Length: 336
Image 1 (cartoon, rainbow, N blue to C red):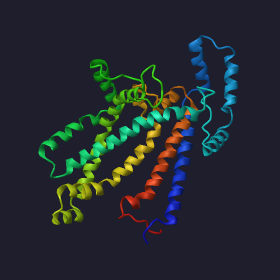
Image 2 (tube, rainbow, N blue to C red):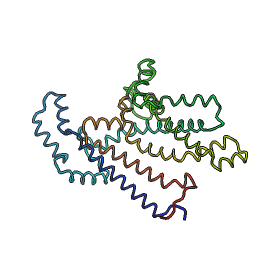
Image 3 (spheres, helix red, strand yellow):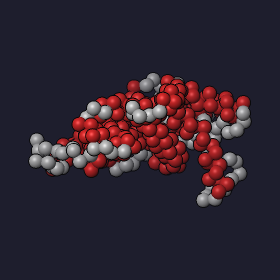
Image 4 (cartoon, helix red, strand yellow):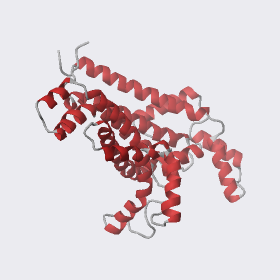
């Protein structure tokens, strides 16, 4: 019997809960396995800045008690799970009394604005290139140019970012090397402020698009080659349909579904930010915030950001899995 069944829905919901629980458990344990004490590290940084911190030992003990770091691990874990269920991400260890959710809320719009646009551009450009590479009617001169466009995809994000900074920021001096907005501008819906944001986002977005579109292109090319010999493609050609219609409505449409699944995972990962790209360009997104949390051993900040990453990714996968029949009518869910 076709259609989305309650049995399937409950199974997927159970997998969603299991994924979130495993993710939160892992991110609770990993920071605590790292050497060092976050509170002692914070006091050490304060001493490096001011030269002396009075009653440092008592201060460390007081802060450890304040954040419950002296409690047994099982008690810390239960408290962490309980807070996560209520989306209470707690206070930042290194930036007390700032709350983690407030810090993430300030950084999240920057990351979404940068990575959402960059990911969608990379998805569209990469899949178009991959589809054209596999289509037999693509002109020869275009076929010779497309592989060249994928040359830089073998370079990591951060290396490509450094290269772009050198060329466009230091050599040509066309674009800023870092930051997210010009100084002295008033935040708001005004063109000078918006244009400055776009101007500062060009280099990091370009690094992400160029370095990632090759993965979309290779995946799409493989799927297009697979569908080329399918019966519906042969029938469409026998019916004398226009080549462009066969390409888009029969080839691309039936090849895009796995790519949409990968896009969903990529969009879920946007919350985590592109850590190294945001760090290199000093872009104030969630990725840069996560880097700061790792450097300062800020347990609560790391846990809060990664928990949001796990939650959004698992939720998007669940939604996509339930919407698959709407994307491709050939997919049905049988009763198990």
